[in-house]
Image (tube, rainbow, N blue to C red):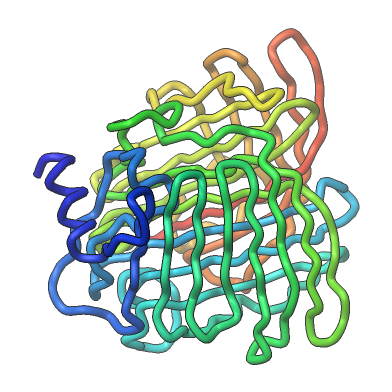
Length: 366
């Protein structure tokens, strides 16, 4: 199907006009019958935050992901919130069977690394995503979770008595958006690999988390991040494993993706920014190499959690990045891990920088 017809199909199924320059997507609260079409070609008229699947079916999924991790290597504070329009059945969630199509997950870690929230999940009464000229808004109905944003700033607002969490998370971008293979360009590919789409809206940001959790303040500043992934097919039928993450050290912000599809093909994406300018955005096979420590690749369900990661970026600016002192940021699930870690980077020319990062891995096969 041509990119024009694909975008038209999604627009017809979810769209009604708010103005000549805005789109509003109303997503039902329950999973819909049939199959979904996934948009994998970028359109500037729809924007990066637009819904990328034509409907939420038992096989389709789409998420808006936000996180903040402390920049202090001695402070393991972090916070993650994910807005879903997805079937539980389409993702490896380990959640009870449900026909919910709109839901939110949160989890945080205190300065000592102790988790709170334990990936708390709340189903919502539908969702609305509005996209305008340099404007985006998401409201997950009757949940107390929403966001507003622009190309450079986001504010996530939370008022959830059900989860005992209230407050805000703010992001002010310091690195430009990108697609898997390069800068954001009209008709650029959003295909990461297999049938999975990905766009990185905020690769790095000056971020502040200001929450009250269970009646106690939870506040810190750090490196913020926002992206989205999606597909029209179940996650586990397309992905064997992946490593993803972001880090800041010295003047550099980096984002990496290394995905292995079920056919055994490795797909990568490498991103480096400095001084709010992109220095590298590439998906060529040798652009980046991401491996766990110890180096067991590809990982399987029985592979233990890594103690760190080694990342080599072979395109200019060349750098070797070592990540260690990992702290697990989710419950102990064999197929999934999310971690914060301390970073040491050696950049071409010999400069050595230190920083922090947040990363995740999926391993779905034996």
